[in-house]
Image 1 (spheres, rainbow, N blue to C red):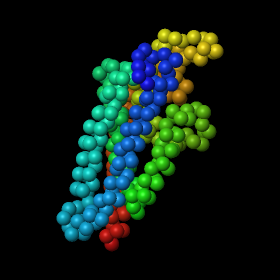
Image 2 (image 1 turned 120 degrees about the vertical axis):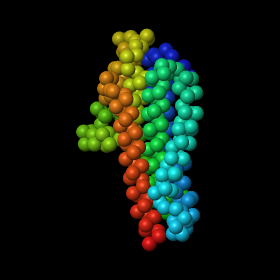
Image 3 (image 1 turned 60 degrees about the vertical axis):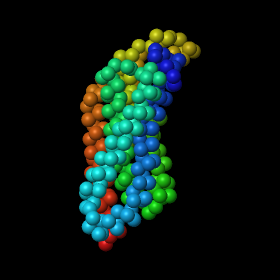
Image 4 (image 1 turned 135 degrees about the vertical axis):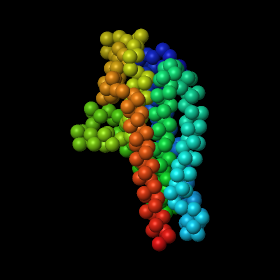
Length: 243
């Protein structure tokens, strides 16, 4: 991946797209793998303190989410920053901010989703076993593994509901929109068939003119929604345990 985007070429396209996808999935998978087991580990203590009236469930949940998100921001920036510049992705301040915000919003979704799934699980083993069933459709309907225009039409709803597709869209548009490939060749035997980044975006069924800021707002909207749903799920399962 080192230098895959500097300069962007057809020859280095696999490394470039691979780095974008791996940064996306890592921002979700690593956080989700950690938070999905946090609630089963805390459940016994939480039930005891909750029944004793030491604190309410809402303050606990808010404090947990805030602390997880703060640590997630630190982790995301610490892992993304060196990779971003090693790969040679667009080094403008605006692009880097957009790139980082999309991944920070994605890790916030991972925190809320992890707590919710952990609350539904009886123990750590069950929580860990749910990780792959969650990640598989997330990656499949991101638009990177299986472009939307190549999937059966009845799968469209899953693409529309995929927050991860929004993340991939932001990262891909940020990096590829308006980029020209110097090694473009109309000769199909050279496999240098992409003239610019917009052609790749269209191949992935992504509009090159997508408003990145709007998509980032959608990611944080998904994060807020998952946070609220996470609290509802945690509260429901806590009420069952304490009744």
